[in-house]
Length: 351
Image (cartoon, rainbow, N blue to C red):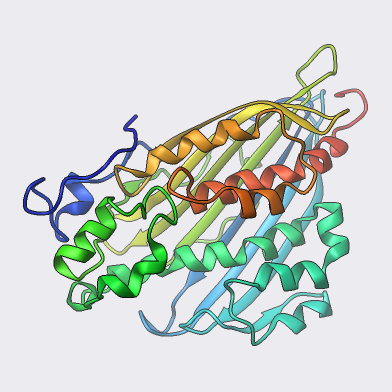
């Protein structure tokens, strides 16, 4: 796997805005299929789909779905929870409408789905956050999913003609590994005044061997984006001191010609001690990332070893910043706050 490091300047390293996605692209080896569900396990899956029915500059229609599935030691299954909400965002990421039985969500309408949105949602849905519910996961993930959905705009044929001054992106300097000050993106912006477009990696859609591998996945039209998550918690320790966890995360775009392609993809695996609510071991990998510098963020994963899941979402948001991190990887790590909830769903014999 490629590591971090500084990119060569345009004109010297042989890359520019047009070819940067190829010559300066990160890893492009997406995960194939979904692991078989283990006996004595709980699988949580979630997707947030973003579609632009009016074209590049129009509104964004969002459909978010999630499910918790228990697989018992005898192989039988139970759906423990399902969740589904729809929303409409304006082109500038303001929430214009949201449909869900919980009427409290209406208070979010009119707010930008950006900075401050999660804090307001937490105020409104503190009970859902406390339970680590599927609704909390989906609402908490809306800002990240809506941000990455902007990648679809970069597929607009007019994108290369849109000029951007480097000083307008000064707030992005060292935001994360991919936006490091000397990394590919900002070098191209400074040299050419345009933001380069990363390439994607073709993904295999569907798990024919296991119809219960995921919740219902709707077909996506060209131009759509999908954020997909899976986390398995497995009672595989005879001593019952720890459980295993396995996480997969992917942001993907659907191209009219090439089909679905991954933009970001991470996997995280480790061990969790329920008695102390502690992540005792953890490691991560990056099958697909946009730029050659992006995998450098993987060094931040080890920082969670020995940490408790108490207030994990808040701690990652405030402490995991700078060029040794990745905003999308942070979204993966924040989801580990739900480990105690998922362990609590395991049936008695499996534990």
